[in-house]
Length: 281
Length: 90
Image (cartoon, rainbow over all chains, first blue to last red; front, side, top):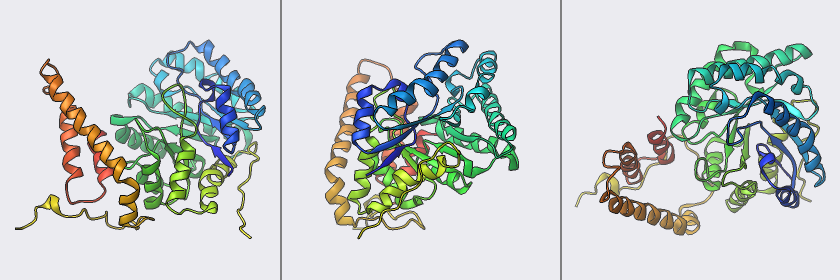
């Protein structure tokens, strides 16, 4: 079985994780920029973006895994607007690097006015990057807040995206970490939705497949958002097993775990992995 | 004797498609895990009661949230996961 991990923070994972993921059929990973567990200086972001665009692709390649990433200032570090301005000025140069899929994971953490301002600036960066190439806006990957802040934060994010009107194409935006109370508002608005298997704070394999059964697999991606917390990239595989246990056939599994991310990411010209077809003879 | 609301089987949310497993298969597959999850909750509530003897948490809003979520588990309505999410995420 081949699959694409649509959201994983490999900078905080071991090389053994890459090896295990390769052995478990992972052919590509998409790594959003995120919080390192502590607030960094603006200079550290330049190094971090180099790590995402230079070092991680090399580490992944030694296991036959393609590495793609997203660049942004994460919402947890968006409170200092001066720092945000400085970091955001670094982003346009990195957006043109070959393994960068777009702007992400932007979003909200505590739904503060400063986070919202930095979110809007990121969206504008994505629009400007597209305009500079004479095409649609750069792909956007959005983090929705955790736990108590999720419902309000998801609504705020949808409201802010609406402010940009026709400049934003919902088919080029993936809103991540949806759960039972936020999935329909995201899907109804035409966005891609991501579900994260991170059992303490997000979804479990069982609940994720329940949501697939209720809301369908169209424009859905499943990830584990494995990072430096208690997490595991192979939660995606446990979710695949759960789907298999409920009778989903190989074609359905390939669609959900490989072809859906390939279709969303494939809107970027540098993402050359195409959806695959399962033919049972 | 008339059955109370909580004695009735929960109704699925209107418009929700049927699950891929039938009822018996769901119980076969998930009963033990759910039993363990409920025991975890019960033990945490016992721990909380014992902990409160040492102070703290008496008026903590998280206790209200837990009680509201437990009521949903035992009511006769569907969409329990979504409704419990809405208690914990305003």
